[in-house]
Structures are given as structure tokens and as C-alpha cells.
Length: 132
Image (cartoon, rainbow, N blue to C red; front, side, top):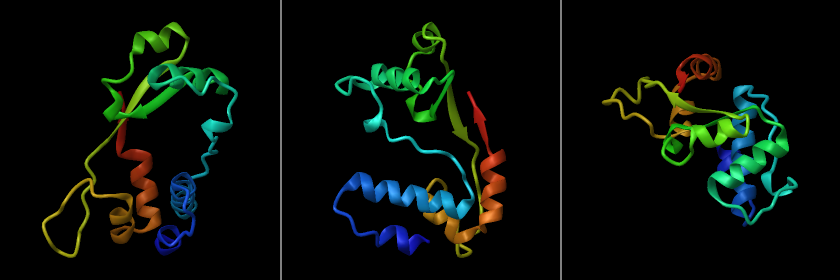
């Protein structure tokens, strides 16, 4: 699976990344529907928070979950004013053996897949995070 993702032949970066994400999701049994934002009917000249809000509204979202790194980028008040609940996902530390060496956290999903079964990763994905 990792080799298929890495060796994907496409010079378009979006296509390469999209392929990698879908291969990993298939491997882990994640059934999330992906919607390509460039195909949504919004003003694509919008930027940052304004664009995210437009995408949420076009999708009919009542909740928007962003990675924890965006906590300073988005305003709960701005989202709430549009009837959208803004949440941030924060992964809990995930520790596992890495060739018997000292554990190095937060490397990549590839590292997690190398050292854990798909079933073990599924259990951790479902339980090892908090919404803030």
C-alpha cells in the first residue's frame, strides 16, 4: 500500500496527495467521503477562514473540525455567527515500538503503519484524540 502511494505517477501534486490519502484510508477501512473543494460552487477567490466558512455553508455543515494547529487561525465566534460549531481535533500521544530504539513521536502515518497493524491503528484512531 505504501509503495503504491509513493510510486504513484502523476506530476500534479494534488493528484499525488489525494491518491496517497485514499490509499491509506482504504487500508485502514476509513469510509469518509471526500469532496474536492475546487469543484464546489463557491467564490474560489476567498481565502483562509472566509473560504472555509463558504465551503462549510455550501456543504451544509453544522460542525467544522480542524487540526489543532489551526486554533489561532479560526474564530469560534465567527463560525457560531453562521450556525457552525467549530472544533479542533487534538491527537493524544501514540507510543509504539520503533525497532527497539527510543521512541520518536509524531513522525508520520507511514511510521505508524510500519509498526502497527491496521486493526490496532483503527482502534487508536477511534479513541486516541479529543475534540476541543
